[in-house]
Image 1 (cartoon, helix red, strand yellow):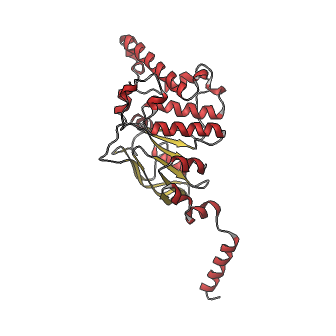
Image 2: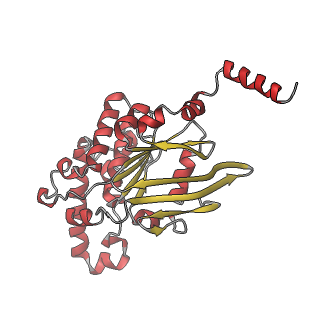
Image 3: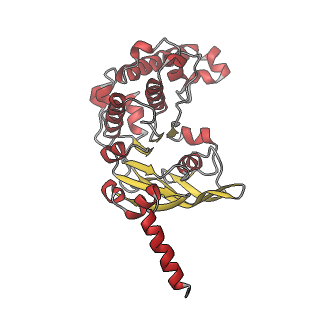
Length: 302
């Protein structure tokens, strides 16, 4: 199982860009939520996506996963166009997303939430349940072992049989992240993983992201064969986050959106010190606005 997981996430040196989107547009009524936006995510990177509230970040996530269809533009994932695919087909190709407010099935147990995420199960075919019962039972047993191992790695093993609805907000975030591992992801889109989470748990979430990105998932999940590690294995991340400490500590590259348009991109240090980014977040101060107004009057010949 670990071998399959590893092979589906092989690093491709000939194509270092795992996800790219170009000329994306999306309007709601007369409002342009995303306006000629582009983004690139390199394989095995941790890439950040930041911007002030209302910048279009979550809308861009929705376009990348085709939760909503773009008015214009293309999205390429792992060398193939995906903007015409349904969102579940995109997920089957290895592009998985989480949500700003963690979405769990509240009346199912934590373990059942994990098992439901497993894709292409033998039991999904009605006839296999009857004619491949042995295979179905064996696969179900392996999936349960895997799910329990992942839950143990994120500290939720004691909650495995509790209702998911009884978890705290931070625990739901962990469950949603853990659940993505059941899908053999190549790229995980995290929408504000630190939002509403206590500082200690934020550190834990960041540590998991680093480990999974560096291919240390086998260190976290002891039930998987440790001999099957591969130096080319690692999960890629694209993260929306307002917590700049998280962005600075995790990300290799950061993209900035403002009013649905690309504003800046580069390493975290460059982005954090960019005047354009500071202005987008904080706006012009009153003195600058007065200066701009005076200059405008002079230019008008008044």
